[in-house]
Length: 72
Image: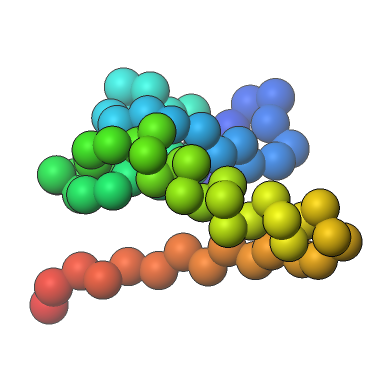
């Protein structure tokens, strides 16, 4: 989603259905179950935080690269 009103940054939080719940945010999921849908978003977010927070807390930088692995 581009140009989300009243947003300057992208939030990362858990939700499993992007179409119903997302408004320009990112939600990590453990398993993709369909277009914009996945399972165990809370579990995936906790894993992401466990990796990123120690780096950020020590003054490091975390870069998130988003790519598509769609089948041709």
